[in-house]
Amino acid sequence: MRAMVFPGPGRPLQLCEVPDPVPGSGEVLIEIEACGVCRTDLHIVDGELTEPMLPLIPGHEIVGRIRGFGPGERDDALRIGQRVGVPWLGHTCGCCSYCADARENLCDAPLFTGYTRDGGYADLTVADRSYVFPLSEQADPVALAPLMCAGLIGYRTYRLAGPGRRFGLYGFGAAAHILAQILLWQGAEVYAVTRDGDETAQALARDLGVTWVGGASEPPPVSLDAALIFAPVGALVPAALKVVRKGGRVVCGGIHMSDIPSFPYADLWEERQILSVANLTRADGLEFLPLAAQAGVQVHTTPYPLERANAALDDLRAGRLAGAAVLRP
Image 1 (cartoon, rainbow, N blue to C red):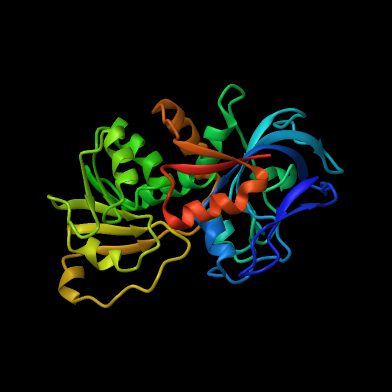
Image 2 (cartoon, rainbow, N blue to C red):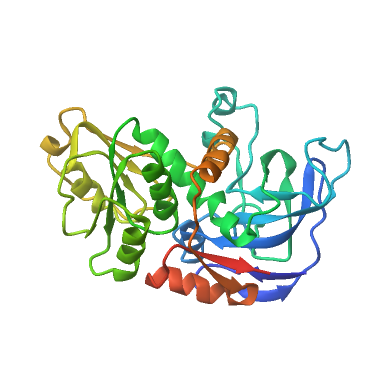
C-alpha cells in the first residue's frame, strides 16, 4: 500500500510503498476513505510531541470501511464493508485506576493513533475494534473525518467548561468551527477570537453566524461564562482569565501549548478555574456524533491527495486554512 511515512523530526513525510498491515487479535483492517490533518499531527512532525513511534504513519482522524478482521471471535456490532471512524485514542489497558473509574482518556498505558501506533496517512490501517465508531453510510467521508478529533476534542472541551450561555472560542480553526455550530444550535452566544488580522478565520466565523468576532488583541465586549482555547498559544490563558466572569472557566483544548506567562493572582481569584483537556473517551464519541448530526454541523474542509500531506501540514502551520484539511488516498 501507499503511505506517507514520518522518518523523524525535521524531515518531511515520505511517500512510500509499504506492506499492507495485517490485523491482529481484536483488530480490524480498514480501507481508508479520508483522514483529517490535525494540529496534533503538526506537533508530532515539528518535534513538539517527543515520543512518536518511528518510523510512523501519522493521522488519527480516519474514516474508512472494514475490509477484514483479526483472528478470533468477531464483534457482532461490526461487519465487512461497514464505515467506521478511528480517533486519537486507539487502545487502553482496561485495568489501571483511570480505566476502572471510566476515565480511560487518562489511561496509564494507552496507544494513540498516528503517534504510538500507525495511523491514517495511508491506503489501509488497522485499529482496535473496541475503539472505532460506526459512522453514517450516506455522509461525505471528507466531512466526517475532522469529527474524529477536532469535533470530539471540541466537544470534550465544551463539556469541561460547565453550564453557561456566553462562550469564547480562542483560535477559530477545525475544532472551533465545529463546536460553534453546536453552541449556536443550542442557543448560546459565541465570541470568536482569532489571530489579529486573520481575515480567513474571521470570515468563516461570521458566515457561521457567531455573536462577535475579533482579534486576540481585542477582548470580547462582554464577560464570558467560559473561554475555550484551541490555539496553542499560552499567552491566551491570562488574556482569557481577564474576561471570564466570577466562577468562570478557561479550558485549554490542545495537546500542546507554548508556556503560559505569569499573571496576577487577582485575575484567577473569585473562583475562576483553568483546566486542560486530555484525549477523549469512547463515551464522548457516543454522545457527540449523534449531537453533531442533530445540529446539522457542516464541516468546512480543504481536500488534498494523500501524496500532498506535506503541503497540507505546511498550510496548517502557516494559517492558510479555513476549517480543516483532509487527505484522500
